[in-house]
Length: 78
Image 1 (tube, rainbow, N blue to C red):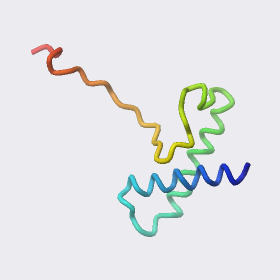
Image 2: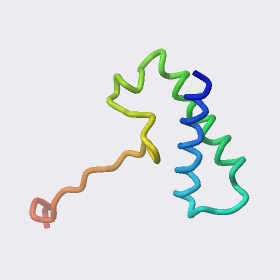
Image 3: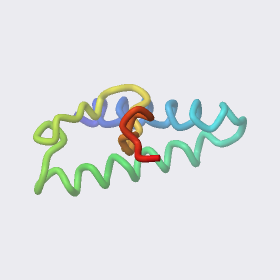
Image 4: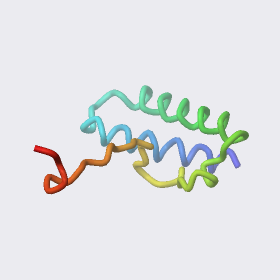
């Protein structure tokens, strides 16, 4: 079980590193950030698991970011 958790943290840390433009010397910070994110997900899992929300926390590079839908130009008011 610990190997699975470590693998998820490793993948998330790698994704953070890539998102930040692959900076050198930031591996410890990326690992800590990923570890905190996983801990936060574990704390909220008892109330609302990721699978219940339709998320796949094992997806490499997952950011859990949300986007705001944009109204097509043809439907906008002048």
